[in-house]
Amino acid sequence: MSMGHEHSHGHDHQHGHHANKKALLLSFILIATFMVVEVIGGILTNSLALLSDAGHMLSDAAALGLSLFAFKFGERAATSTKTYGYKRFEILAAFINGITLLAISVYIFWEAYNRFLEPPNVDGSMMIIAIIGLLVNILVAWILMRGDTEENLNMRSALLHVFGDLLGSVGAIIAGILILLFNWNIADPIASVIVASLILFSGWRVTKDSFHVLMEGIPNQIDITQVEKCLLSIDGVVDMHDLHVWTITSNFPALSCHLIVDQNHNRDVILQVASKLLLENFKLNHTTIQIEGEGSAIQDHEDCCN
Ligand SMILES: [Zn+2]
Ligand SMILES: [Zn+2]
Ligand SMILES: [Zn+2]
Ligand SMILES: [Zn+2]
Image (cartoon, rainbow, N blue to C red):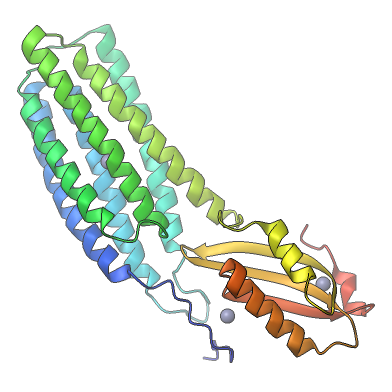
């Protein structure tokens, strides 16, 4: 299999994967276990706040499980039919997570609406489970925070999400107090609406971000006009076109473009300068640059993708 290109560029997006995987696995076990506790507690106390949090924990467990699966898949090597291997599976998993969260939030809103119309009797002891939930969420947040949350879409979305969970747990505890002290049962659906709003918010974020990657959108940290300016500033480059910058998976951006060059310049020098500039200024490691001589017939294919 001749997949290897001669130029040596280590895509260095593997770093931290091991630590992330361990963090995800531990979080997954914690959340999945607590979810069962919450379902039982929710049924026993007739609390929608607990049940919705359990539904939400289910989505968390699924999300974390999927992320784990994505890491495993992402490590699989390139094949002759998938030249990037399964690197982007992680993004696909994030997208599915996002859609699932949106669906769950809609369901809870609906259930809460019914409970507003007919407030059921809720046992205030649900508060105890909510407190345990808070502790589990704090623990998971702490575990995930030690992964590389800044660069990895999955880790970042997972962490953001857990922060929302903390607020949800606090809401459920307050509801429990209100029910215990004032028998104010409506606090239960109110708390579940808060949980649903958090799920909606994180679901929207994850869906939007992963959709952007799937649509081959420009990485957030890269300004394409700056990239263009940078390449045009190279001595010997007359013009350029067909510039694309996209993301294969977290921390793995790619670029392709055509440079039109002056016939009297050394093309290898131009190529080297361009690669160096792209790497240094934009951390673009994986680039494909087509060099075309000024006035060359190759330019007839122009603008086939715009
Ligand atoms: Zn959650
Ligand atoms: Zn193109
Ligand atoms: Zn061209
Ligand atoms: Zn390459």
